[in-house]
Each structure stands twice: as structure tokens, then as C-alpha cells.
Image (cartoon, rainbow over all chains, first blue to last red; front, top):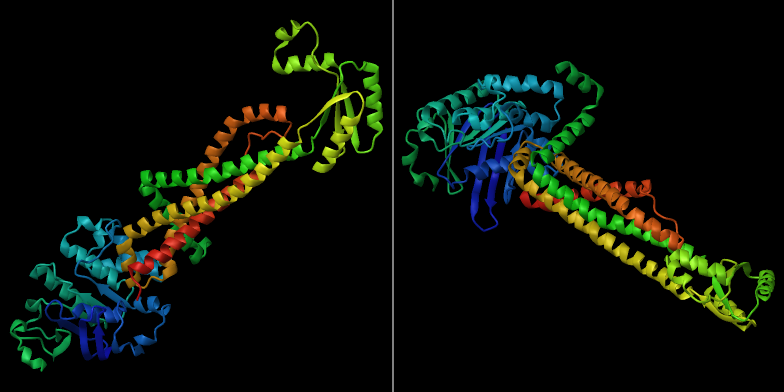
Length: 235
Length: 314
């Protein structure tokens, strides 16, 4: 589903965001991406959403080379990826319904169909009763769930999440992960960037570890103690 | 409510519906900051007012100038000793000459009466011991007539016995026509500069609007919004600002013209030109609204193109 082939990203200031990344994520996988801040997690996600272009190498999504996409095709491509942010990035002057409806409006979904699909997405995150509220009146956990509803409302085959639990306490974080598991069960491919090691420990997920732009570990079945991960493994 | 909306949804095509949605949203955005929006609209109105006023002023001046050009009269002041019968004979002689359309005779008495009426100095004039005015023949030449021909005619008239002097207002009229021509050209330059000013005002307003919606634009982009989708509300906004500015300008213009018409009417009687009516001609209103909206649209487009590429472009 997502494939990186020898991807290197060098920024304009000469620093390397990613170095020689090779990885493959299959359809229906739920994969975590960890590493210290600045390790390249966000850069990796940005390459998939095409906010960045690789300096070298190729990124393939759904058997298509992203290099081959023209400027006009990029918006259409992006509609098939749901994105979730740490700071949820909801539009603060719109209510919950309008926020969740945004991807549908952008994709040109017929007006009459929008309420049904928004309600389905809100039902999934258990916020059906808050559709008329403004995001500022919601708790942090609720705001993040609105963000998730917005990401799934278009039924994208791929969901990318950048530190989705970064601002939440462990209890709420577990709730969010449970939501992701539910999505994964219906076949959605998820790539979740997180340095929340507590969350990943002893869980059966595949975990990719980045350090200084390099992929230093690709483990199945969770990690034992991420913070004591021997960095020598990279060399 | 739902029945009503489903009616619209089935009647309008999705594309049209999307435009209606965006247009209404833009109206909402303009109304959301009423003070700032009003200031922008008034600025545009004031800027648009100047070229329109100039245009109307020039049109009036031009009609006056054309009238003047076709109203060259030669006033032949006759010698005071010339008897009235000789003056009338001369009038008949001149009337038969080619190149002369009409000759009017104004006796000294009649001349004094007209002078008294025009100046309101009848009380003073009554006290005069005798009439100081000479008898006058007013010659209207056939039009069109060129300036050299006029000067030539003047020379011929001066040579006639009994004619004391000849007055010709040609220089003033010529100068006025030239001034109108220069004003016309200056007006064109001023119009272009003011159109640029409107462009900048709207461009800057749209730039601020884009800045305010930066996060919305970024998030929409990431969700697969196309450039036309993102651009649309700002184009509608520019369109709206331009249109409302032009409309306000129209209202202000009507008030100003209504205020100017009475003195102009008085002036038009003296100088014999077509006085302006209190109504703004439809073609000027149309031109004003069309220019306003077009400049608003173009300003928004320019602001979007230059500003959004700065926000993010992959």
C-alpha cells in the first residue's frame, strides 16, 4: 500500500530529513512510527501527503509512483488519505458538523448525502450529540475525535496520524487507539507517528523506529523498552 | 426547511449549487466584519467616484465646447453717426453675401435694454444722459467654418464703410476646446491610475482575508482541495467588494450631481450649452458597475495568485 524506495529528503538548508529509507506497508496494516522529535517522523508523513517531495528515491502509494502525479492530480490523490494531527487543526469558527463535512464539500459529494455521512462518522467517534457545538467548547479528547471523524468521513483507504495522542492523558489515548483498531478491522491502512512508548509497549503492532532520518528498527509485536533501544542497531 | 432545501437541491445543478454556496459564504464573510468591510467598500467608492465625476464633467464641457465652436458670432459695432436706415440697408446687403447665414440688427435702444436686463443695472442706466451703445449687427456665419475663414471674414467686415469695430470671440472658444482636449487626456491617465488604486485596495483586502484563512486553506489543501476550489470564495469576495463599492459610488455621484445641476443650469443658459440632467446616464452607471466589479475580480485574482504561492506550493 505504501512503499518507500531509497528515499532521501534533504532540506533547503542542507540538513537531511530522511536518509535512504526503504520500507513497505501492506494494505490493512496498522503501523506505528516512533523516534525522538526531529528523527524524521513528520517528514516521512509529509512525503506521503505530498507536502514534501523526496530529494532522491521514490514513494509508491497504492501501486502508483507519486513522482508521476501532476499538480492537477495531487488534490484528487490527497482525497484518498485521511490525516490526523496532534493539535487536531479543526476550524474554530465552524461547528463540529461543518468541520467533519469539510472533506466531503471539498470532494464535491452531493449536498443531500453529506448529513448522512457526517452523522455516520460522528457516530463512529461517539460524538453524534455534539454536532452543533463549536470545537472550543469540547474537551481535548473530544476535539481529537472530531479530527478523526473528519479524517474518516471520506472513507479513505489510508489514514496517517501525526502524534494523535500527544496532548491526551493515557486513558484518552487508549480510547483513540481503540478507534484506530476499529478502523483497521474494516481494512483501513494506518500509519501512526507517536513517541508515546507507554502506548506501544507490549502491544502486537508493527513499529518502525527512526533516528536522525534513518530507519533503525522494524519490529513486529511491539517494543519492550523503546527509550533504551540500543542505537548501535543502526550501524 | 428540509423540504425547501431539497427543492433547491433537485432544481439546481451541483456545480451551480456549489457556486451559490460559495457566494453566500462570501456575503457572510463580508458581513462578519461590518466595519472593516464598510471601510473597504467606502474607499473603493471614493476612488471610483473621482474618474466618474471627471468623466461626467468632461462630457458636459465637451458639449459646451462643441456648442461654442458652432456659435461663432461676429459683432459689428457701427459708427454712431450712421443713421438707422443705412444700418438696415447694410444688414440687407450682408444678408445676401455667401458664407453668411443670418444677420441680426440690434438698435442702441434695444442693446441698452438687454444690457440692463442682463446686469440688473437698470437704475443706473436710467440716469445716463444719453445712450452710449452703438448700433450693432450680429453676423452668424455658415457653419462649419474654419478659424482662418473667420479671420478673413472679420477683415472684410472691418473694411466696410460705417463699421467702427468688429468683435470675434474665437480665441476664447478655441482655447476652451484645447483645454477640454488636454483634460480628456489627463483624465485617461488619472482613470488608469485610479483603477490601479482600486486594484491595490481590493488586492490588499483579499490578501488579509487569505491571511486570516491561512489555516483553513492549508487544511483544505491537505484534504485535496483544488486551487479553483480555494480561490473561488476570494474571487466572489473581490467581486462583491467591487460591486458594492461601485454601487455606493453611484449613490454618492447622484447626490453630487443633484447638488451641481442648479448652478450648471444657470451657467448653461449664459454660455448656451446642453445642461446636464439630474440623472446619471445609464451608460455611465453601467460602466461604473462593470469597472468596479471587473477591477474587484482582477484584484482578488492577482492577490490570490501572488499570495497563495507564498503560503504553500509543493
